[in-house]
Length: 165
Image (cartoon, rainbow, N blue to C red; front, side, top):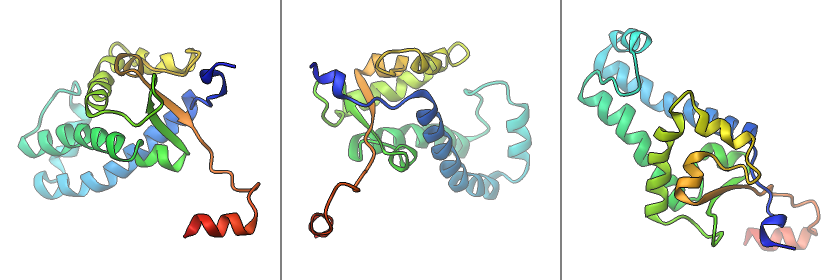
């Protein structure tokens, strides 16, 4: 049996939900800051803005554009997943070695999000149809998202206690 046959790939809907969780968490942190800096006019501008690359000001550039990009790279590199993926028992690995991502791979994958979004998010939709559940950004960076549920039901009480030490 090939190594890839035993892998449990995270599917489209699980990854979509993880992204939504990450978006909510980041929005909960950034929205109050941006409101304090710009006031309600910023959110009215967001509704009318024409694209992702529109910038309202320096704080918008730093907090809403650059910080999320950097957070992705840091989370992927340090933890192997974003908070949403962690909550849904997913982890990001190098497709060849199944090890944690290098900084370079994490950077390429984050930049690949922009490419995956063009046109009409086809690079993300690709996940639903790919046999290894890779989006375009995963293929560019050579990454996989695996679903590793923490199922401790088979462990004895002693084994569970040993894991906590």
